[in-house]
Length: 130
Image (cartoon, rainbow, N blue to C red; front, side, top):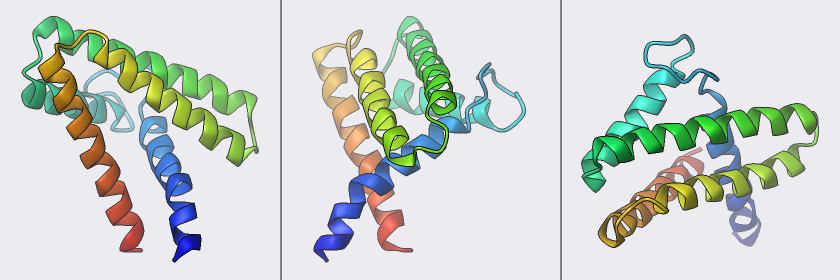
């Protein structure tokens, strides 16, 4: 059981990495690969749950696109080094949520924290069901 618990952070990072890697660089709605849908779904979910203003929703989109582009550059630089990529991905994901939190109210930040925990729990659940 301890071994499985030690693998959980690796799995979560891999899951998040694969999720963000599927976003196309343009991350526009309707773009090929479904990444635009993911971006819109994430933005819509956060907009609804956090009652984001249009300006905040636009900022969320910009942050996700910027992080996605950085991850693409990181992936190119770290070709073949899975462990390093997973660590970088964890850092980029943390950075993404910190950047999103920077333009939220205190109440919205609490909602973002709940969303993030639910996201992690869904990933853990998927891992347990494998």
